[in-house]
Length: 165
Image (cartoon, rainbow, N blue to C red; front, side):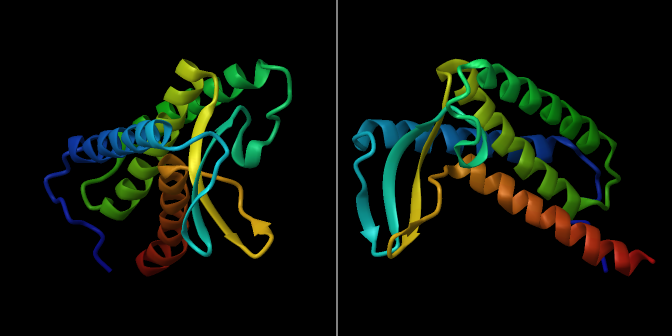
């Protein structure tokens, strides 16, 4: 199975995708802060709200009440992962398009949230999905990019690796 959309091997397209995701993430967070009141849900669908919240922890507010050290720990972790992703993207072969898209999405999400954490001290979340009384933790576009990128990375690992054997 072929994976390449870009036979020229240019890595700049992947960094462009990363930059686009960071810009879209920051734009949506800016709009959320401008148009939403903190912790006041704006219902769009019976299972979907826009709710502005600030996350001082990691995923699902893990360690949010840890006293402040977590801000710099998670910022350092995100910076290290981002650097590793840039190196990985740089080393990709021209035919590894699917993997490049996955890595660029993860990198874009990591950088979007890293910016928030370093500049603001928290990550802006505003997408709320729920059913009845069950709420999934609020998230943002960067979180979505990371999850989609991770899913693509898993697909890459199990589907494309098997077709090359």
